[in-house]
Image 1 (cartoon, rainbow, N blue to C red):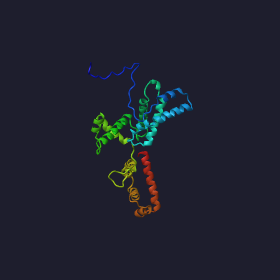
Image 2 (cartoon, helix red, strand yellow):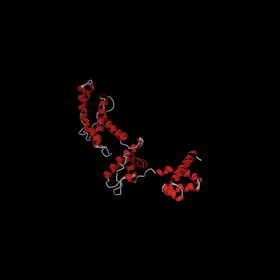
Image 3 (tube, helix red, strand yellow):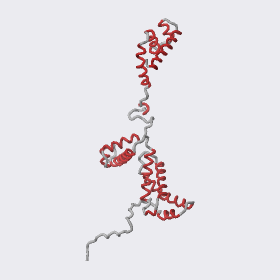
Length: 275
């Protein structure tokens, strides 16, 4: 009598490769017969009703997939809608005759739809797809490491060790986060009470536009008679009125007005002609 107990051999399946085994969740429905019926029905109200029944049955699965993306800054309702769109696409494209379980088709389809949503609609700046993927991997790794060890931001080296990426790839993924969401100009500045981002941003310096003109004017001003240079200085640097200038140099206000127009016209022509 044999005393050793060996596990029974698994039955040999013929007729092609065995279908992969998927772990069933409580929310995974059995809609095999519904899909067969759907495939046999012509377009019409009855077919639409069966299709809607399948979609409703699988919606909890789509919502479960959507929850994986809940830490990426998108609202739960928007994620649910995108996942529902992916579910509808999966139902319409599924071919039962291929012999694959619907679960093995719907989950990648919904996941792909969610990833496309983040890639195409939520980036504030255009970022190459490779950098988007690095950002996604580093972000998820950051969340996982934070949950395992609260209280500190993971370094690029820790993220690289956790994901199998290089440290440079991890640093690139972290840097890409700056292009994911644009900061509001009303956002508070860390460490500065009552200050907003708009308060510390630079603005266009219109004086820079005058640099070339000023440098071009220097030789033209140097060629002016001393009296004309004095009039310009008193008017535009001393900010005297025409009457005050007239009293200063001993002429009428009307003469000062004519001299200013004449001098400015001469300088303008010199700038235009490059003389």
